[in-house]
Image (tube, rainbow, N blue to C red; front, top):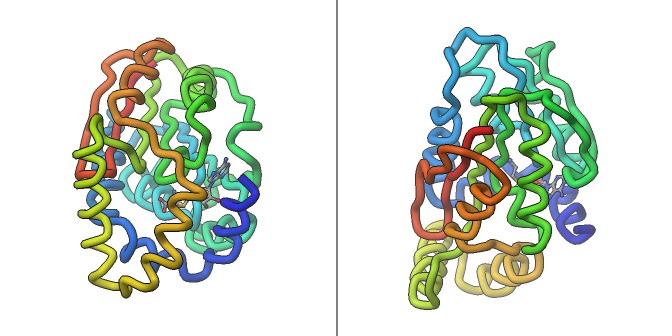
Length: 225
Ligand SMILES: C[S@@+](CC[C@H](N)C(=O)[O-])C[C@H]1O[C@@H](n2cnc3c(N)ncnc32)[C@H](O)[C@@H]1O
């Protein structure tokens, strides 16, 4: 996890530009997660944003739910610095510098969301972490995750990888992809099959588990407590 932290400490200032060139349909993916939250736009809901980065998701959440109170958590101080700047006009957004695995809440949130962060957890950590997220939620609360996922067969995973590289080639050279982005992916990312996520969520007791959006190796999924 230290590698992941160092990566994002360094990348913070250029993250917003970079993410658009590395994640196909980033805006569309994140929008689908925000739209999945089943609340009236004027409700005073409490939301937890895990791995908030520079605050892109929380900004979209505040735009849709102006009365929401948001807790943004990230372990990279420089990412939090950018998020504080981006969300400076809101006085109901709180920032916590922490590893999400160290959080301890109980029945506090109407929604827990995360984007492109939880795939940095190791495989065995994920199901127990979903169990903890369920504890963070009030009854009836929802969890949605927008993330890098795997397919269910080697053929699909090769297709997803080819499609990802095809997208990155619009903005980056093959040499840069081979020397920077693919090694970072191999060393720092631990995506699990989408169907495993669905089963883990059901096994720890989430209801109405569903996949909201998916495109090759990226997906948005979640459920209700
Ligand atoms: C790719 S960025 C995504 C940022 C933001 N959610 C977005 O979609 O624009 C991943 C973020 O997750 C944070 N992160 C990854 N693992 C984390 C962990 N275990 N605890 C806290 N933050 C974590 C990183 O520091 C980084 O800021």
